[in-house]
Every structure is written in C-alpha cells, then in structure tokens.
Image (cartoon, rainbow, N blue to C red; front, side, top):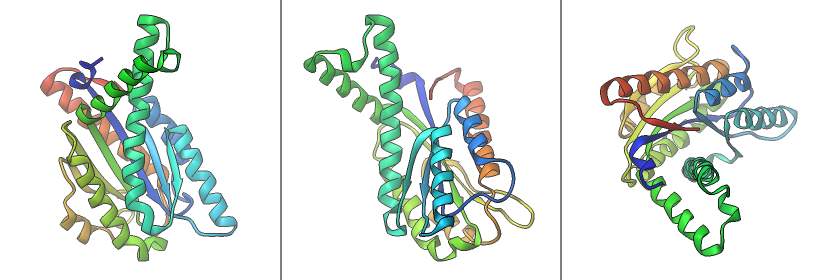
Amino acid sequence: MDSLGKEATIRQILVITDGCSNIGPDPVDAARRAHGRGIVVNVIGIVGDGEAAQKGYEEAQSIADAGGGMCRIVQPADISATAQMMTHQTMQMTLQQVVNQELMSVMGKTTEDLPPAERSRVMQVVAKLEEEIALQLVVALDMSASMRDKIPTVREAVRDLSLSLQVRTGSLEVAVLSFPGKGEESTRLVQPFSNKVDVASLESALVARGGTPTGPAIDYAASLIIDRQRTVDEADGPRRDFA
C-alpha cells in the first residue's frame, strides 16, 4: 500500500457559499456528476437564521452528500479552520476507503476487522499516504451580493488553507474560481492551477455581485480538474485517481 502514494491523485472541490443556488442547473446534480468522475465535493455553508437559512443548509448538505464529501455550517470567523479540517479529513476518508478495498481484495477483511496492533499499522500507512499523495483542489467561492462583508475573511481562509497544504510532502495543485463571474458569466477563474494561492489575485478579483450560480460553478470546477488531469496524464503517463 505504500506504493499508492506514488501513483495516485486525490481530487477535491471545496465550495464556500452563504446561500441557495438560484441560477443555472441543480448544484446537487452537478456534485453527483463530479463525484461520478472521481472528484469529492466539500461544502462550507455560511448561513444565518430563518427559513432561508434552513433551505441553504439543506442544499449545502445535499451537495456534499451527492459529492461524496463533507458539509459544515459555520460563522465567518471559523471558515479558515473548517476549510483545513475538511480538506484533511476527506483525504483521510478517501484513503481509508482505498485501503479497505485493498485489504478486502487481499485478506477478505476491512480495517475494522483487524486486531488492534494491525489496525494501528494500517492507520499509520493512511497517515503517511495523506502526507505523500498528490492533491488537486479547486476552491469555488460564492461572490453573490450577500457575500460582500465576508470577502476579507474568505480571502484569508483560502490563503491559510493553501499554506497548511504546502507543508505536506505530496504535490499540490490549487485553483480558485468565483461565482458569479463578470457580466453575464456564471463563473470566473481567479487563479489557474498552481502550487500555492496568489493572495494578490484574490485581493483584486473577489468582488461581490449578482445571484448564486452554484451548479455551474461545480460543473466548471470539475472541468478544470478533468482537463488538468488529462494534461498531466499526457505528459507523465496515467495516474490512479481516488474517489
């Protein structure tokens, strides 16, 4: 199992939003499509109180469920820590699933079936893989009009997430998009894939306006990952993707 880290890539979308989608296709369907192509979709919801907030929470949870990811509803001050926690935890969950598949095929057992000492060794392998495995991440930021006061906090959260991921030994590629985009565009690519987040680009590009096209944003984020993976495969040969 140690060799898995040399060949594999974990692919994730992190959606940060404060409201319900009201433009374009259903974001739950978009998340399901992404997960069907080996991409995990996590959602951080920044919602308030009342009926609209409940609807926003239900949509956020449904997106994460369809995308095989996690959903957390937070206050703006907690976005940074939550983004880091969710990214790492879903990597662990994904790797644990793969390890269990390997164990089942070889031994007819999962981690839970192993004696404590063997289970501990397996979890050490998972922790090692999390440090070494390649990660492709697209952060999709809701920049609808209601996000205006939250932009500074969101910008810092994305920067902190990038810094926390850079301490890993595995390769990192992170892209950032906002939704809606300019004019009639439903999305805007703020930063293409890079090994870190360009905070200066976030400073100038994150402008709150318009509605909430969450579905188109998830579809676009998935297309970025798929196109990037295709480019990597053509250059380096095929890699194994974990979903």
